[in-house]
Image 1 (cartoon, rainbow, N blue to C red):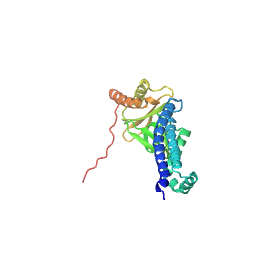
Image 2: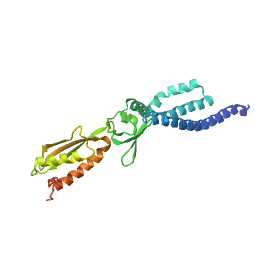
Image 3: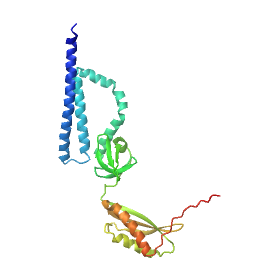
Image 4: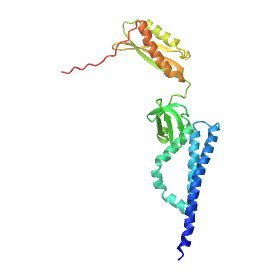
Length: 262
């Protein structure tokens, strides 16, 4: 029996499959880079670009695998039958990935946030860096990168801090009972109205809001442009302490529980 004659066709198929696989992977890398550059230059929404680039690479790799299997001589009907028979097991194994893919499609369809927005979701918060095919990439204020599966993110509550152009900054200040109420209100009004980043419309809210055990509580609410939120937050906290000291407005120390060992 001519074993060489029998083996040679299989060896040729295997060698051809390896060549096609190597060339295909190199070609996919070149194609995805070229497509990625075109996508980056396009006017598509920034949230959609990383997803399309990931999807392009995934589809090309699937087509390459199918081509290699065909070269190896596996009949496509048999291949489809095998996939169908193993479909249940594959579905169980990849149900998380399928859920994340569906979640990514849902996020890009509904658009609860875009690349560049600061969001909070699934227990994490940060600026959206990219929406990939299976996960969303966030960057925290201290420059840590968080990868959240799209399935988890799409099924949880999402807070988008960048969706609106303006935001409200809320404060509560405790003042001693002996201090004149009108004096405190005038001082707080002057502080918030003199800050260059607070908005006049809606107008600032400054009112006495509660009688505490050791202090009178004042609530201050001011509207600002979203990008000025934290600057105004810290500025007003600092200015209130400085002005209260200058105006001799007392700020009671917080009550502390003292435990004495018997």
